[in-house]
Length: 269
Image (cartoon, rainbow, N blue to C red; front, side, top):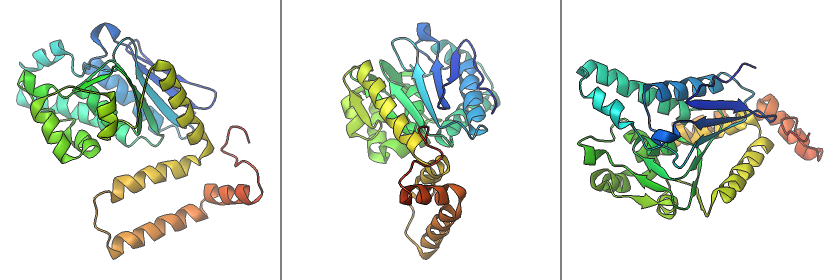
């Protein structure tokens, strides 16, 4: 099936149910981005995309924080780069975020502690997010004379334009309950034990679902969100359900339901 690339700054393992566990490992820097961490995340999610057997990805940060965004020393050095070098660096960050957003396997993120700047971008790209009480979110770029440009398409998609405008311009901090109310995270919980339980619940539900259908369901949202319901869109949706019904997983799922058994993708089958 292949092997997940692991490194000192990104621990990557695969469990018995083919659930990938990725943990950013720069706790002394609150898992802030530098070129190496950006490259390691991109490499890991690219590997997952090429490993169809992977059923889900759980993304965490080691230590007190999920991610404090960009490492300030890294950003300071970027101030001396050429415009072309800075554009290339921004594109590498964007490519990494896109690899998370379009990952075929559902990506579950656990937000805790500081979640700033690019860390909010990681959360916005993840498909399911649980936040632990005490997590502090902040799009703080304007306080440094910068903007959240590279992460903005993903954050705006998660928060909507009006809320994003407020948070981009004010750089005000907000907590887990606000992040849940605004749609950035899906569950706000009291502590790490509750977060682990929520992750386990989502993983169990994903393992009960057909892997191909899960990916296709995510693509429906990516492809249809915000679009006018035209004849062409409705025709495309009919083509997609026809394809799923005729697929091996579609036939297996319906047969298993009628025969009152677990489908062959279920670990308990």
